[in-house]
Length: 463
Image 1 (cartoon, rainbow, N blue to C red):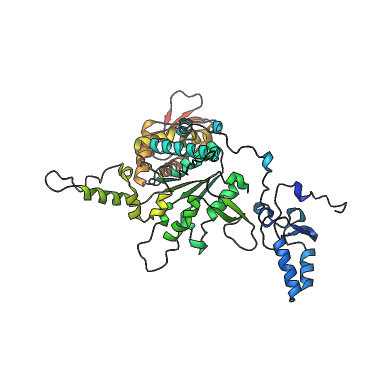
Image 2: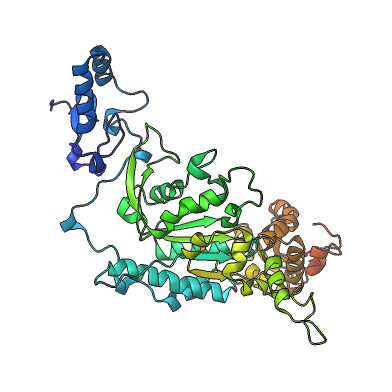
């Protein structure tokens, strides 16, 4: 090595060498052969190059120019591979500490207690997730110590929009400090016809783990909008975004070794590939499953008898907990194939939010919406309060929008716009109280000036 070359030896770096031709990393292709300008070629590609030379038809001048010319946009230190596509070396076996210690895994009641601080209601869902995650990571930590193999507990969450499915998973991954990839099933197609191919969900997990394969193999993948890959009713054309995606995901859910691109969503000749085993990756699928309640009601109505003692057909029309009565047969009727459902053994539902739950969501969680606005106005040294009538009025308006907890922020943003605009103008304002009359449009907020004991009430509907 020349004296003026200050680049570290590749053996001391944390990233693997990648073949310049086939883009496979050193752990898969074998020890690399170094060429000028820090280009690496695997033995297979080198042998193919020699065979092409011996058989004729090979332009030696192009090969020499390619070896002596740096690739556009990359420096020598990057080894012609962007950082987001570089694969970390696996640590030596003797240095490898145990990935998970059973004693370090929080018990289910502790996991649920932490979820309670952020998520209001949904007691059954939080309990089911806590137990499933605890058992999953016990399984990973045990590492098959004896002949009894513990199978994976993949989960399926069913609940209306805005009930907290994605928020539950985000909170869970943050508490457990494990890699989490959140993706939508809507963009998945068979073999990547138009959107992403099925392996792209694992690629996102690898990126979340900073391209550390061992860390990614113990992560969580949340696939949202799973109901969008249900079988299409029409069979006149190939269903590349429905049943075909379910069939392709079977091997991921079950656990198998797959080759995934590093730093990209689809495989091509210029992207390095690495192998990931999905047997220890926890898959959580979630979806709103619209019109599933109608399927459940139809099934329940068939079971009712006829005569004077028969149940009325509209008996279940106003049942708020109708989704809790879901069965695997209902999901098959919806369009999910039985092989796919069989790999999601833990099925639980989330309740639709009522007025009381929405009021609690507004004020009780650690990062509640009201606390966020109070923090914003506290930076202007103004105290913000909401009376009970205002909270219930906001909750009623959110129920009318029928988008769950997502409607709360939209409603508060609308009514707080004028207040957030006007308050910085007047330094004498010390406190603002949002009233129910202001939310209903029949009055205004209560404003208290600094040092003033009697508040000033705005009479108009706007600030």
